Length: 393
Image 1 (cartoon, rainbow, N blue to C red):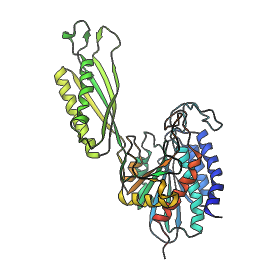
Image 2: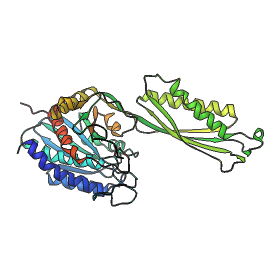
Image 3: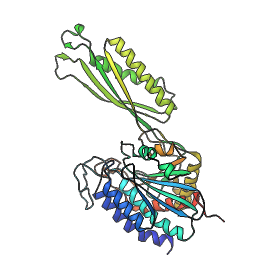
Image 4: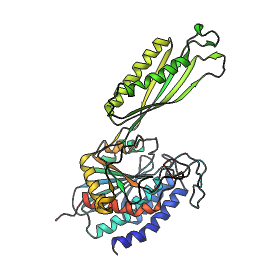
C-alpha cells in the first residue's frame, strides 16, 4: 500500500480516536483514561511502552536498525476547565471541561504516526530510536517540567525533541516553523498593599491603598515603555485589583495581581527586579506597606538552529515548499514544551488548523480540532523521522 492510500485509510481510524478523546476530556494529571487508551494502542502496535512518568505520562519507544541516534516526538494530553458550547455528537460528556486547545488532536495524530512508523520501520525507512512522548498537564501545571524531573531524558536519552501544535487561522496543509523564540515565558505576580484605613471624607487621617495601587499600576508600565529595549518584546498586565467594599471607607488593604510575558530569561530577571524596586518606591511615597510575590512560570520556548533547519526541510518535503511558513511572529502565549527544549535541542512547530472565525480559536468554548489536518500532521512527523534518522549504509 502506498503512503497516500495508507494515510487515507488511517485518517478515519485516527479521527475516531480523536473524537473519542474529545468526548472524554480529562484535566491536568487526571488523564487516566487517555493514558490507558494511548498505552493500549501502542502495545497493540508492538511498541515498547512505559507508563507512569509524571503520573499519567506515557512514552513509547520504537527502535529501527542499529544507530544510537534518538529523538522525541511530543504530544500533550490534558483538557481545559471550560464548559463546552458545541452541540455535535462528540461534544464533551463532562460538565465544565473540554478539549478547547486541540490536545485531543495532538494525541490522536501522534498515535496515527506511531502506526505509520511501524510500517516505515518494516520498509527500512529510518535508523535509530523514536520516543513517542504523551505528556500530561501542559495547561498551567507544568507536566513537561515534571517529566524532565522524573527522568525523561535519563531513562530515554534523546539527541533532539520536537513538538507540534495546531494553530487556527493558518491554512490547512501548512506548517509554520521559526528559529529562535516561538512562545513567551510566563510569570505571575501578587501584590498586597496595606495601610491605615479610614473614613473617605477624611483621607488625611489614612493611608490610601487604592491611590497607591493606582500609582503602582501606572508605574509598572514604565518597565516596558522606558526600561525595555523596544526590539525586545515584553508584557506586564495587571489583571486583578481588589480593594474595599463601601463607598465611604478607604480600605486598609488592596490586592493586585497579573502576568509578565517575555522571550528572554535575562529580561525576565530584569523585570522582576524592576517591579520590586517600583513597589518599594511606591510604598515609601504613599506611606503604605507592599508585599510583592513573583512566581516564575514556564520559561520561553526557543527553537534551536539545527532542529529548526531539519524541521523546515521535513515540512517542505512532506507538504511542499509553498506550504512551509517561516515568518510567523512568536506568540505571547506560553508552552511547557520549553522545559524539554531547555534540556536537549528542540523545535516547536505550528500546523494550520484552518480558519479561526466563528469561535474556533484556541480556548474557545466552541473550538474543535480540525480532523482534516491529521494527514498533514502524520506526513510531517514521518518525514521528520526520515530526515533526522535516515537509513544508513
